[in-house]
Image (cartoon, rainbow, N blue to C red; front, top):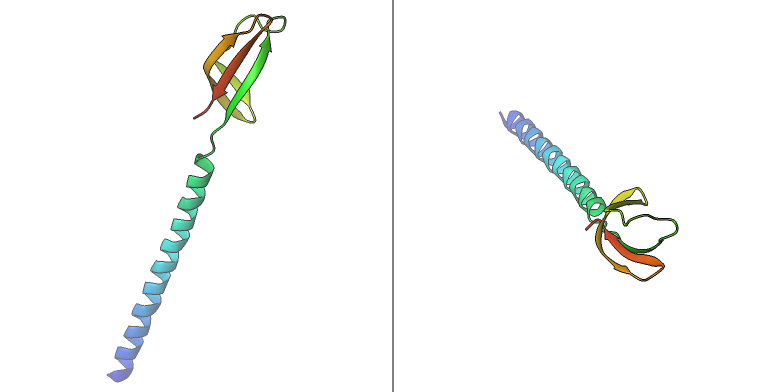
Length: 85
């Protein structure tokens, strides 16, 4: 009888540890996902009127698509600020 209780206790402890370890791994994966999502890019470009007919609403940069926030007409070029935030 005593052996059976010890064996059942050992199985219960082992299954608890397995559950906690699995939860810890999931927490680490979730933390990694949060870090990669938090990247925010804001960039200002000079778009020279000789090269550009208009100021685009979206611009690809570093593998991301940046959206136009605002722009200024500086005579020979537009100063446009884009962001993915």
